[in-house]
Image 1: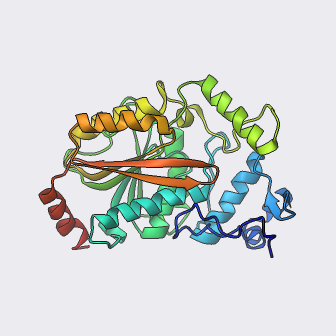
Image 2: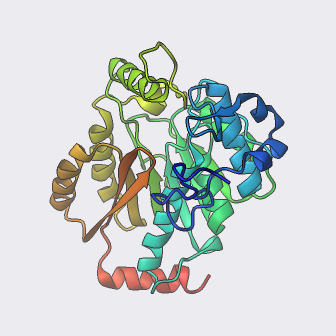
Length: 320
């Protein structure tokens, strides 16, 4: 039994999140035995993982994917971002809720939905979670050929993912949708976790803050979730990336029902809302996600009229 001051439920996570309860480390060690080397008692006296250690973090997330989502193979280069599974799963669940709001309260599942993951990364995490939780189809884009190859390798090694995820290389790093989607190609929703640092210096400062929070002291260390430059850094930072995404989304206005993106910095929201108003979107929604020590927002927008949305739902979701 965990002590009273170590809560058994992570109430900030989405109600459908498989990882709301405290990690069953015994079960996770069964599917990933090497994880046992990095388990130690925390300040409450509970067994816990050393979150300051890159290897430990990756082993934990591999175990979570295996135990809860049936993903037995999840390998990618060490220098690439290792995402925390619970927070990534939350995004998928809130996107599912967003789609349900547009579908008479019913989450459209299976082949009814095609989702575009912008900047899929080497770990392929959003497609993995969207496929295993809701059976959606995915297009994953990335500007890095190595990341595309890594994601494709993960898909090829997991039977549940085969035929559900298509990995597409974005050859123009200045483009978001152009070069990825065909003129007449339809997608139901986009997801995106944009690079949030504007420079290597800013990324380094973020690393030091994270290390200090984990260890209670200053130290020189890599991000505990790793990450290569294009995953973490974009010239102009998160706001510039989302601005470019929003402008380009207007060119694909009739190709997508909901455009969505994570916004990690609350200070950017006002500028994003102002831009979306300027672009004359027909509807905007904001979802607040609490994932541990920080709050993130998902901003969603659509250009479709009420009539176009009704037609979309009737022809794509209700017939599936």
